[in-house]
Length: 263
Image (cartoon, rainbow, N blue to C red; front, side, top):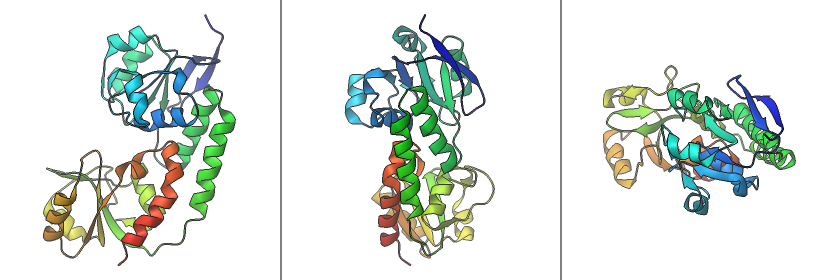
């Protein structure tokens, strides 16, 4: 058996992993993209059907199911020496079953600090410390240089029928704040909203995410009719909710978005 070390993941769990993981399964799209950016594609043996970046990785690796529906037999056959999961994106029962057989390292992301810590920790357990540190330092520098945007109240919708939005204590909430958007929701993390609720919130801007629900131009036009007092914009959900190396592109995206959303 390869020499192992014990590490503590972001959920406070102790995980025994090889000194040099060689067969990694990623159950989280943004962390799959991070592994690729860190130069670890050759060590990745399995990904989910939602791991769409980089495109060729999904085509080359074994699909182990979705983020909330694992193919346990396929995972067992791959014999992973490290599985990367996330508390919110994956499901507890599935993770617990996997952890009975395989080393499972879990991230738990609420804000930018958590995301940057995850990047450093994943890089460290995969022996890519320098590469991980460079990502973190670049993200911190570029975010620090963001301008002071004019504050605008905003509602970030992630679903319709029923409408659902991102509230406080979410990673999306902090990304909104970086862009100068003041979240009109103050309580639940992902509340359901009626049209009357949205009207009463009266946000300056309604942001329609491209994921998990694929809002499109037709939805924008419909909402503009329903809520004429608010500006409605389609936004790239990956920029607001992917917390790996995608953060390198975030500052430029937020500046471009705020150029569009002028009120």
